[in-house]
Amino acid sequence: MKLSWTAALAASLAVMVAPAGAQNKPAALGVGVFTFVSGPAAAYGIPGKNAAELMIDEINAKGGIAGVPIKASYVDEAQGTEGVITEYRRLTEDPSNQVMIAALSSGNCLALKPVAEQLKVPTIAWNCDAHQLLADGKSHYYFRPNGNTIPEFVAYAVYLLQRKPDVKRIAIINPDYAFGHDGAQIFKAAMKALKPDVKIVAELYPKMGTANFQTQISRLLAAHPDVIFSNLWGADLENFVRQASPRGLFSSSQVVLALGETVLQRVPLPDNVIVGVLGDGWWLSPDAQRDPATKAFVAAYKKRYGQYPVFPSMKMANAIVYMKAAYEAAMKKNGEKWPSRDQLADAMSGSNVRTLTGDTVTRKDHEGVVDQIIGITTKSPDYKFPIISEMVRYKGDSLIPPSGKDAMGWVASLKPSFLDAQPKPGSYK
Image (cartoon, rainbow, N blue to C red; front, top):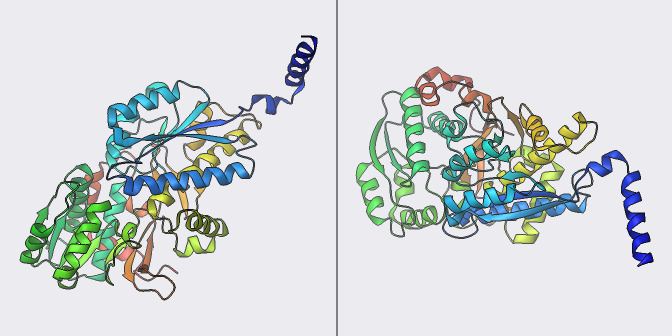
């Protein structure tokens, strides 16, 4: 008993004389990571989770954040929004879980935002793109460092018109839920503003999980569009590409696949398909290739998972870089003391963070301003799959509405001269 008491006393004295900064730090930084690890959306969710695991392992191997290791709790969004909210509340009730990275689904983000504000928990929306999320400009705890649907789909309209200025007839095939309908609305509004004489000749919205696209492909061929725009993704996009290629759809029309980068390693996309990464997260971009940290991440990802990262992987990795930078900035401002949740949120607001693929500027409304990378598919002697060439990197601040501005009204107000101010395809070196 005496030995135990002496050991206990020694331990308590050690805590008493520990440096203030060390005493202030937690044993671990708990982080909730929300993504899909089952169901159709796991096509994006698992690459995101893979990136989170890899980034956290690498940060912890280097001592964590200011000596504090990260301990992640992963939540599967496939359980539905009610379950996601329940898990969010459960995790945030534990004060050791100081920050949430949530979520992939825009629907889940929209549902979680008021909860984050109520519970005062810094939350990083790592993938959800819905431009409506931060439109009220009143968020204090919710942050989106990876951009939204307005600059993402305006960028495709700009690139298309730069490459194919004489386009007249456009068809759209998007998934039948908010992301698909919002994407179509934004793209149509941008095209109408930048080239008023364009005509929409077909709009198709297949249900998520569609296995057979033959009817839709027939309708697209019959419409004779100059351009087919799509933000299909996951298994839907793979099925569409595999069925559309043999029927000549990619040779009869210019195809724009807004999320096409994610299937480059999985399906044989032909040359000259316009694709991008919904942001700047292309691991083979010139900026990424010039950054030793990015090249090391890509090599480690390939070694661990047997494939190269796709843009959801890069978005997750960048979200963790963003979180780490916020902690370091908050500690610097706080005399190297471990920050509270409020101090962490304050550090995120208005920040400028160098990520693995570019810079993220967080506006006062917590909207992240990031560049948009778009190009066309081309064969490469260095890889067994198509890569992106003829790239352009559009500046994020040129494609996003000002804070407080009606987003769709801003898109509709664009003029054809807007194209002249943008960098041209192939200019990104």
